[in-house]
Image (cartoon, rainbow, N blue to C red):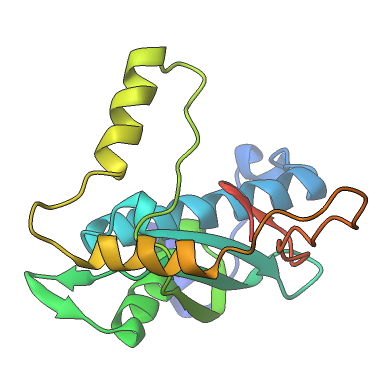
Length: 192
């Protein structure tokens, strides 16, 4: 009781022997990787809480400072992306606020900004098969992602537009066309 009163009055008490030993700290590079992975997990959990499936978006995070405590996120969403909160549609700003709060509460890092990009040409992003998936599970997952709704003509219009945009086969000996992939970087699902 006396040490507590001294603490309240501003007098310092001798620290117990247990407090004198320094706790082992995580190496700096391991701490950076840990914070980045915790931010990945926090963003995924925030998206899941807003009823967003993982094939509706892909993201990348970039550190802003040397200590990997402040990040920005770049999120690319499909045209079917729709975030919900408590059963009502949530705006990008509301989703961003939820991610920022989750990153601070769960990972202890600051998510300084979120940059959104809507890819109108993609209904859902292809998800690579996991190592533990069997061949039948991978086929079932692919079939589920490419399923069309009967009577929905939007998919047919997209296919027709893609076919008309395709160029005829190039003659032999011509230079190959550019791959069209961006050199921005990659996400956990592949190239951006």
